[in-house]
Image (cartoon, rainbow, N blue to C red; front, side):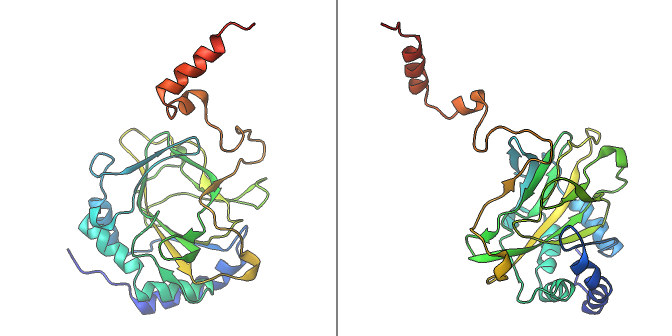
Length: 272
């Protein structure tokens, strides 16, 4: 395994080139940078990325998301561990501070919620805002970084990363998940994003990415709110069930059989 280290001078040049664009971007600060890793590093990362059956993935299969994720550093392939460690190293953090103007950034060595992500055909991620508080580090989440690992990706397969306005009336930008494309964006209670359209890639393909999150001790007063987990929201025109409800068949899975039988007996008991 060849040693890979980010070049601080190259990162400084990228920050200088893209910083103003990042801060002025709508609907919230973000940037898209192509060809982010050296070709050889990217190729090795893709080659070592595990398939759906090659790792103990965490399966998210709810109403609002269908994806695979692995955020346990020790379970990841060695090369992926090495590359992820460089995204959390000083050179990378200093680049992100210069790019975004957010000082005092702190990486997450535990990769809580981040790490490797993979979407199989039919998978999706409804529009949402992210959890905003790291319960272990006791820090505010401020930045997301995504690196896509999808070679020869075709437009008809979908999987675009969508950035939505605060009222969820319009998608303001779509980003195709192309190979070696990096997306950085600021996270807040109004940074709505996702890829809500089910993935239409062939059965032997998946949408692959690295995800890293960065934190600060506190955040601007204008962004302070209650701590929250991931919050999914319907787009304009979508109709969802009342928040917190489950379909009846899924709800019954969580009810002990004895209680289900008692409820049915009470329902069927003759009325006097």
